[in-house]
Length: 189
Image (cartoon, rainbow, N blue to C red; front, side, top):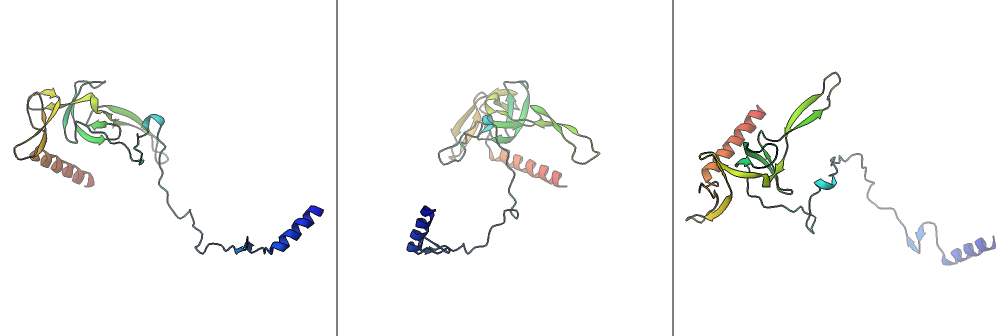
């Protein structure tokens, strides 16, 4: 009891009031409290250890250079679908994977969304590694490695080493863009 009385006496000598903190007034912040229920936070799935993206020191993912682009015709050289030919529809540069149209289907079991509706079994195109494909010439029916050269007009292009066929021409890209627009319009309609 004597210790408490001595402590109270020393506090009184410091002249601390309940509204002050070490001699300075302690005021609550002037801004209103934030309501977190009003904000909608995006749901982000946690990546598995083997799916994590390798990052640079500035926390941006490392994007790998690839020998293929969207719209290229490729031949599968390894895996279950070896020998099949298809067109690239999507590229994931952080892990060097690509999605080829109508190749490497995985089965996904979907739950029913509404009551009374049955579940579904859906086939989905899964990505494959870009090292398992080679560029393919439709005209000569041959798979080839890709080379790079500069034309007389100064433009850099990719070409097939076996056939010499140029892949990156302006005409090819215009066709690909038109086809993509048509597909989007068909999906919208």
